[in-house]
Amino acid sequence: MSYKLDFTKPILMGILNVTPDSFSDGGAYPSTKSAVDKAMIMIEQGASIIDIGGESTRPGSERVSALEQKRRIIDVISQLKSKMPENIIISVDTTSSEVAEAAINLGVEMINDISGGKDDNRMMSLVAKHNLYYCIMHMQGSPKTMQNDPKYTNVVSEVIEFLSLQAKRATDFGIMRDKIILDPGIGFGKKTEHNLDILKNLDKISNLGYYTLLGTSRKKIFSEVSSKNNPEDRISGTCATSALGVMSGINIYRVHDVWQNRQAIDIACAIKNS
Image 1 (cartoon, rainbow, N blue to C red):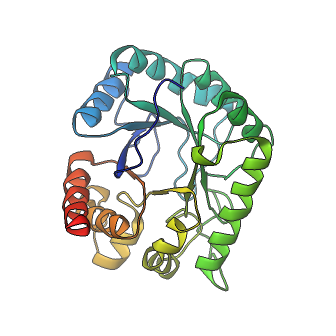
Image 2: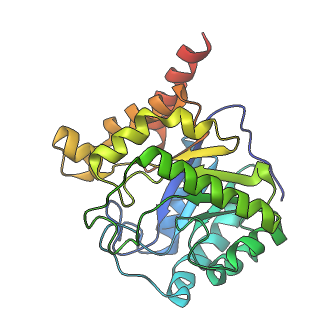
């Protein structure tokens, strides 16, 4: 690990989907150069982490093979590593240990696992072996089926129970506690009322004793609350939840729109610390 994240202040994670079918930016970066250029812009705007994904996990999406994920991300990671400042971390958004291992060999320092370790039994031991940051997310079902009428008795309690259980499992595999990051999974197997309940109770997630991540960027919840169907029209809503996250003690914000969220977070921090 060449660089440790500074968790004394909120951290921005810039989203770089090198996929043809992601809900907001699918197909936006058809070449390695265009993807690397976008990453460098996000870094200039204040992102400390670039999260690279080779598989769309939008509702209804089909799974992508490890081979195809590697084909999409490897060259981007390699080129970006040669250009970016040393104080920036690359994260890979995958549930596959095969994809993770290929990325680790190129110097990736974080794995963002939307399955929370459920999809691949080898993932946690691999992360522990290389002393990486590991993001554990809650999701009900799979991306293909997760929005088919998800149900909860108490969504906040059930999300907390899952995250706590998987975090304990991660430490049992040898992942250091200060490398574990918990994500409640906004929009992953959750209706609008579930997402709003989680957002209202983010402090309960941040009080679990681990670092935390919030990923609301351009998501459907903003369409359902404010009738904005174009994902690019949901930036203001994303910024509102980022400011809310600051007040609730969230550490990392996974966003498409870096400078806008940086401004919202900085203002919220100034108010919180005044």
